[in-house]
Length: 578
Image (cartoon, rainbow, N blue to C red; front, side, top):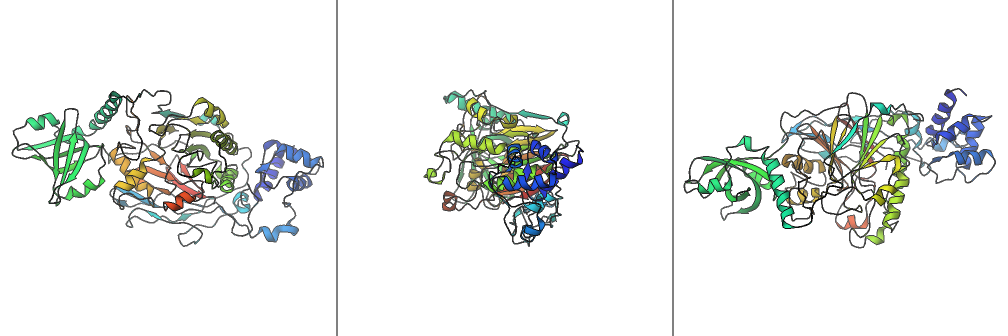
């Protein structure tokens, strides 16, 4: 048969929000009367089906209808109603320019992929979004769009950029030979920790030595022993781990810094310009200070504080071809609030030409809701067995195009140890989630996609950063700003003994050794992205509506969003499917 006929059938299906297996399209295109076969097959497909299967088509053409859907070709019967369902899948361009604390900020303005009138069938993409109707540009004034500024108001506002959405992507023009994907910092199968004291010493010594190596060239470093033995006076510097922070009766700050030789006190006067940086400090992070010793050599008066930080001269790498990656997290299959319809709109859209350049899917943890994660969670579960949750997740993952490269890391709701770094799943769960040969690596891990390095970290420590730092430095409304703090500290979870559980290993896998091009997190269920010294930080929201527990702790999630990254330009577009 001519190649145009299957393509036409696929476009016709997509134009009305339906997807279909390749074999189903072949059967329809080869029918004696393809137009009639198309109508009959759609009418006979079960209402809750995600797409037309070959079995649906065979049963329909054999006169064995298994359900009922509205016909898609009888314009006279249903066009008026369907014209109300003008769903779009528009998005917003890359981060706006402008700096605040050397941060480029962007608006978290999102496009729609929902029906504005008559709802589409369950599991189907909305009519116009799949059909190729040119979506309206999204603006902050649109009441159906959630907006929020990630950063200070001095950054330029990014305008809404419509996304061109074209019909079906049956026969996605993909050349796998052009792809490259590698993983670094994956500690799966390499855990050495036994919980002994020596393991903790090894972890912190490794952290200190690696981060101190980035700082010692900035100050006239002397270790704690050398400073203690000094007669006093003169300029001095020290690189150390924050052991304690206290304030004097006069309101000055004393920072006890520890290195491999001992602890030395450093005084930050409250009237110094750097006094505000003390509010950013977390226990156990590594910093450098410089200033002058007191006359008796007992304390160092601090003039400057240095963080390991991202170099000001950092320039990210980009892919050498136009290819995209979708960044998502916190799917939470098994929860009563898992947004199945939004997920299916997303996966259906991935089969369209509008998403043809998306060849990678990076999932930053919490694939399932888990069991016993928070009090009375069982009352909010749709699936109470943890293995059944992963089986259901695997079924939903099958809806993603089979030619996509998928990388997943665990999160705190997943069935792995809670202490970070978290190894990838055990063999039993890997077997369950073997769909599309997905790669399952540790949390955190560095995934390099066509030359672009993406630091994937689920993000539990963001809770601690947001709790400890002033609101203007880190908040749930602007999760990317909390991520900037981790980039500045060059460690994804610096503070030990707090809310974030940390596991001792021979090396500290949580150190940000090499600056990533992209930093991708989840966990807090809030959408936000921006650039810090040319590193794109993205928190990708979630696929779970607000739970009763989230209401009790005042969390209003950003659910049903899919950030899409242009790997060749590092520009972001966010699509909304809820």
